[in-house]
Image (cartoon, helix red, strand yellow):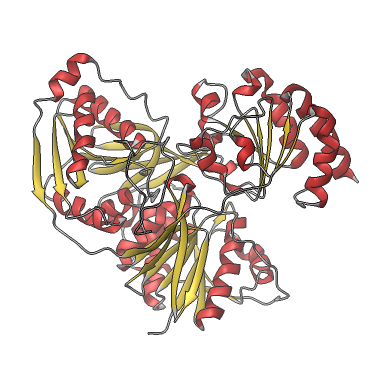
Length: 249
Length: 337
């Protein structure tokens, strides 16, 4: 089975966001970058599929040199090799990522292409479905359960108040959601093995965002909250304020 | 080039979702500001009885695709719906009516369709927007990124844009319109083939009848301060008194006390309700990212230095085990008056 998992790096979720001087992106000074948390579920699922079916897991990323971190983390979990599609800069939108990935993927004949459902930087939730559409493949995203048997795909995807049971066939694009599996922690052996796994670098196929960022700003700061210190004795006053001042009840 | 908007109105089990009314109000506003025509489209069964609801929000004409007819185009077993087929219908309708702006709500369905429609129609995507502005005949949007830690204003070099609106941000407004015309779309004209059913939903598992945090206007959330899953009845009682959804911090979800579907935060859901009450939640940066855009934030925590108090509009420093029951009682009293 040829299993491809698309990964990216994102700022650690503890990052306190500061806007860069140019005003269109975050200030990356002091920010530590990690493998996108949702991608961990995708990598884990890829590894489980490999263990069940034999085959190989190839991690693919689109980005600058920094994106190799995502490939290395995937190697530490157990991916076999990696591909970096090298972007010319960091100013790319979901369309550019999807276009580059699909240009690479179209000749790869993967049985399954896995993604994290979204990356926690731009929260697009677009790339898996865009890539699938560009490749004319089915896509199931926000997946919390996946069964693949003899070319048949059955997945459960999370929706408001429940789950949808979705059926399809391979080749298929899957967007992993938290709860799909428990990502394995790299151990010493897998970390050592990761060091010799190959990364193929290829030039990007496409430049040309469809959306541009005019400005990035911090949300309006909240100030001047009314905080009371007398526990349950303050309840009556709180409720009065919620009704009469905030008008929320 | 003149603009034309196609608004997709989502229904579920024969009823229009609240998010559909949010889309209508915003679509009407945008079409007025752009001076553009507006078409609306819906897909479902038995919606004929619900059309007066659409009319009340200002819809005068709606294109209707019958779901049973759609399902007949699929040769396999009966399906609930298919995202690939829906994306095809919406894209074909947009092409046929020459709509360059396609508007949907950023519900699970909307998010599932946006990327597909954008590729089919060669459009840009403005997804999960909290504001849309019109200037010089073009639209720009604002959307939260980094789980809401920052907001970006975006535009596009193309006129063709798929826009999804974050649920529960754009308030639906009723009008005094009463008349609505239906155009029943002939499914044969939409070029639907078996390949459009590449993925199909065969079943929907309802995990609970409870209101989902992502769609709720009021949320009561609990964290580690509740000390154990058995104490979440305090959260549920308070939520019940307010008609609110229940939410949870990552810590209690990871501990197995609450379901992941309730998790609010950077790796859970980002919510923008009118009222968010955080109980026994200290306010880690990832949790704040998920709820800080709530209009009114109330915090209850026994630690006066908990970071949550820095973004709260109102708060009580106190023991949740004493404050929550008292708060529930008081709300029940006030609400019943």
